[in-house]
Length: 104
Image (cartoon, rainbow, N blue to C red; front, side, top):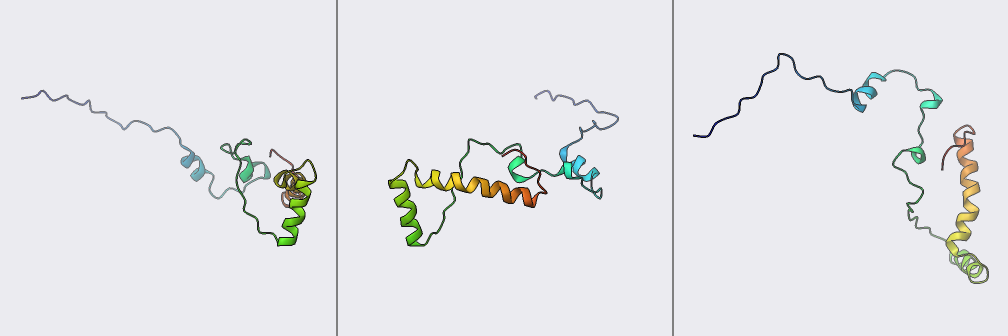
């Protein structure tokens, strides 16, 4: 017959550490200030070195113009679009977030 190990009984359950869920629940009903706002591009898991694909549909003439630029300049099609779209994205984000330019 095998010896069974006895577990020690506690008079009170062990206290659980406060979790993110507890903090979330504690903040329920409280108004959020602008400093509490975390935009998707500011999340801690977001990395600048991760590239995402975005398929884009272009009318054929516009595609051919973009290809012509890439063939006759130092730009690739992607780099040409990226260089020109970043300022527009930042401008729109500034308008949508009240002008607060932050990381990313």
